[in-house]
Length: 263
Image (cartoon, rainbow, N blue to C red; front, top):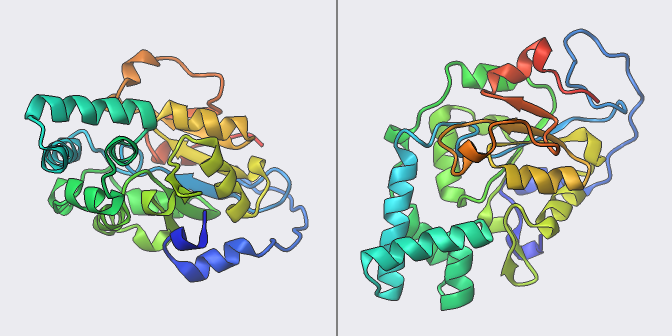
């Protein structure tokens, strides 16, 4: 990630850029089932939508509506064409804004601001006790989302978990060599590993989108699939994929012994 696109929380980012001090291996206690395998530091990379909160209840509808309206305003097309382009670019690039930028020269920041111009607070739904459950996961926590920063901060604030994250890495920070490179691009995932400063085996990506987990696993990260029936195309993946180390239905399940991640 270039200097112009540094993640939120600059002081924390400076710490990420400093090589970590050597760690002495420690014996695992019963309560440290998620400790890093080599005695290093566990780093959690959390997705946002349909991972930390349930978007299917209301937020996805608001995003889809606002993004379609943003396409109409930017390109002057009708509703049907705007919907088609929005979906096509999301499937092709992992984010509609990339297609709008590459094929139509639309300013990314303006488009993201317009497409998320709503208050997420009354629309947020999450599992009970989410903040407490997150605190139970030992290690550093970083948000890694293809959503824009303002939206991500609003959702995390509503959930009451914003202060638990040392950094927020959003699509605003995913510009590499002049182009947006969101999840699941390998270029982004390599940059993430470089900034984290830990071996891939100490890093866990928690996601609802399988293609993002596949990239992480290819680099040696641990992967946790939060299965959510409201995630697009989730019905096509009823079983556990070979690049998924652990599949759960909620953040809370990460704390139970039978769902412990090995290594």
